[in-house]
Image (cartoon, rainbow, N blue to C red):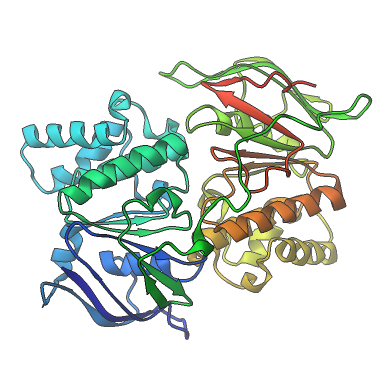
Length: 465
């Protein structure tokens, strides 16, 4: 039995505690869920349980069978899968990543090999063992992180938003793995917005707000069930009307990476000014690569691409015209304050200072992040980082906005608010917007068109209109 008693924590140089008097219990083979909105303290709690918080003001205890656990027992007995998978990937290949932990424990090579096979089989990645991790989609990276934790055979597994980058098949595979772990007597703690996939295995729900446990119940709280209005993608509706200006015209685009077959194959697509598009497909189907190619970050091997009249443009030629929000916001946050982060591109565009100040405030207000203006971006929660990154890409008022899995780290209500923010951006600025995601949108009426991808190809017949 793992018991947490009156755990409190305050980050260095902060006045308000991030955790206040947290108490909970988890029995062997039990699965509990921490449910709460972004910024409520879920991630901080998991980091505290794993012993990974920076030195701050901390009190309370973590016990097993009545005995306080040492730091060494916590580090070896608890396995943590981070919300941001990239932050815990260290090796270049899949096999090396899963072997890294057991090798550091001096496990015999024969046993390491078996652990690698078992862990990768559990997450359906065994056939990709020699693949370069950098070529993985976000969902594949998350599954790899789960495998690397499983290879350590911990007694207690902590999962921070484990479905945020997983498609439906990935969620079902993860559920199967967790069911097996429960049967083996492993304790599981899940911090998650989308609790629906795990209802069958969760024994108890702890509701969290403002760093405190506000309630405990056996039944799933309706507030945190995903899919407030979501449905499967529906038939394309609006499309580009005759005579309407074409913003993007792509024909037969193909892209490959070294050592891999084509990631994109003969993709043809047209986007009109002010269109709202949903690019839908499972993890690894090529959505991110297509967005990066349109943004000029990747050059196509073959095919044609014209954006605002520029043929096969490079990223620097599209500054202020096309903006890309990455799957992982930490990859585009580097300034010391949120204000400087949002102003960065505006300064490069040599926009006057008073106009920069107006746009920064406007973008942060639209993104519901103005209260974070003086914060250090990398100290924010994952959901807050997403909103700051969104503000930084909409501040230049681009003609085309590309968002790669923008719902990661956002709870259901925040996802709906994000769609409203983007609709306002289209209505006020005429911005064309593409959302790439492996899930249906929370509002099925938001997109003018749904473009479906599978195995590197666009399979929607109406993709080019």
